Amino acid sequence: MARTRMLRVAFALSCLVPSAMAAQVPPELREAMRARDEAVAKADAATWDRLTTDDFTVVLADGTLLTKGERLAQFKTQQATPPAPAQQEQIKHYGDVFVRRALRQVRDAGAAWVLDIWVKDAKGWRVAAVQVTSAKK
Image (cartoon, rainbow, N blue to C red; front, side):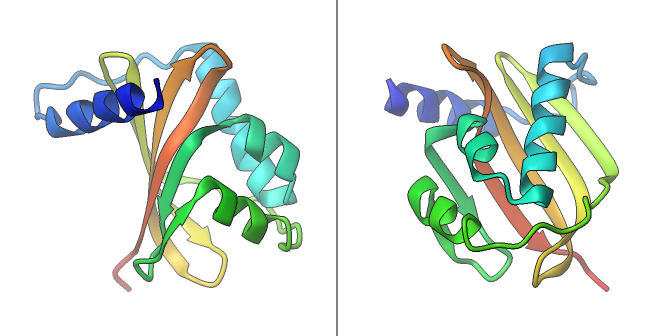
């Protein structure tokens, strides 16, 4: 099941074409995005865990790849910080996958482009993958 989801995400990403229409973001997805962003700022591991798929991966700005377990362990040691508002946010819809890109202030990385992949499964809207890339200064 997890492999199927990741294949669907990979396929959706491979189909990113200029003809993709602007996303009509479902209210429950918008709420999940808000709640997860807040969980990151507040270092709320339980909410972050609930809104993150079991096969989640993140690539940090320095190129480090972390699994959900590795990121969750790291996350549990973090202190709460003020929320980092998204700038230049863009959300695109590809089939049953939503891709959000935004410029954010990231802990220990400064300004970074953050790309997160949202999928809907039996547990609701959750993040399957995140890519963090340092923004040009």
